[in-house]
Amino acid sequence: MLTAGRVQAVEVELDRLTKRFGETAAVYGLSLSVGRGEFFTLLGPSGCGKTTTLRMVAGLVEPDEGRVLFDGRDVTRLPPWDRNLGMVFQNYALWPHMTVFDNVAFGLVERRVPRHEIRRRVGEVLEKVGLAGLEGRFPSQLSGGQQQRVALARALVVRPALLLLDEPFSNLDAKLRVQMRAELSRLQRELGITTLYVTHDQEEALVLSDRLAVLESGRLVQAGSPRDLYENPREVFVADFLGGANLLPGVVVRSGSGEVEIQVGPVRLAVPAEGEAAPGQPVWVSVRPEHLVPSAEEAGGLRGTVLSTDYLGWTLQAEVAVADGPRVQVRGLDPAVPLRPGQAVSLRIRPEKVRVFPRRG
Image 1: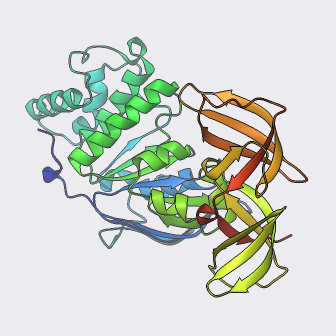
Image 2: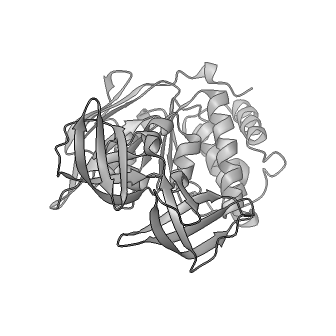
C-alpha cells in the first residue's frame, strides 16, 4: 500500500514572506503556519498573491524578505528538488511524448530508484487514483479528468512530505470538479500528507480545508477553520468574498449592556456588541443570503421588490431590490412557494446571524 507511514509529513511555517515584482508587492509580510498532515487552503481573488506564495513554498520563486520553514528548518534558499514535495499545476504539465507510466515514473527515475521498485510504486499509485490499466496511453488519449489524475499520481508517487496544488481543477467541468475534489480529499486524509492548496473557488475551499487563509492584495486578511471564517468574518472583505454576504448600510442607535442597536432602513436590530460602537456611527450590517427570510408584505421587515428568480431544482434563489436601499441576494428558498419578478416582499433579518462592521468612506 501507498501509506503516509513511509513519509514524515512536515509542518510548514511562512515567516513574514514578501515578494515584489517591480513596484508591486505581490505578497507582503505574510506569516502563517500549516500543521502536520493538515489540508490548508490559500483563498482569494485573482492577483491576491496566493500562487506566488505557493511558488515560494515550492522554491520556484525566491522571496525578497522572510523565510520558509519545514519542521523549523529554514529551506528558503533550498532548490525545489531538495524539499521533498509534490506539485500539481493548473495545466497538468504532462509530457505529451511520454506514456502514463513514464509520466508518473519520471520523478522516481530522476531519483535513481531501482526499476523493480519504480514498477511497483507506479502500479500502486495508479491503482489509488483509478488509472490501473491505462499505463500505456499518452496524455492526448486521456480525458481531462484522467490527465488530472496522472498529474496527481506523479506528485504522490515520490511520497512527498508536502503536496502543493495550484487550482488543479479549474479546467474541469462542474460535475467532474466535484468528483475530483472528493477523490483528492479521500487520498489526502488516507495518506496524511500535509497539503497546501490554492483556489479562488469558495465552495472548494469550504469543502476541502481543515483551515484556510483569505488573502487580499498580497496580505493575510483572516485565517481559521471554514466554519469560523464563514460564520465569524472579522472584515467586510471576508464576509463578502466568502459566501457573498449582503452588506446593508446602517446606523448605531444605542450601545450598551453587551449589545448594540442598529437602524437598518425601517428595521431596528439588537445584536451582540463586538467592539466600540457610538450612537450615530455608520456601519455595515452583513447578512448572508440564506439568513434573509422573504414573506408577504408585513411590518417589521425590509420592504422590497423581486427583480429575478433562479430555479435550481432543489432550491430557489432571488435578487430583491430593497426600497431606498441596495439589491440583495436571497438563497435557500422553497421552490414550492410562489415568488416571481415584480412581486412585493418583506425581508425579515435574523439578528442572531448578522455581523456588523464599521463603515468608512
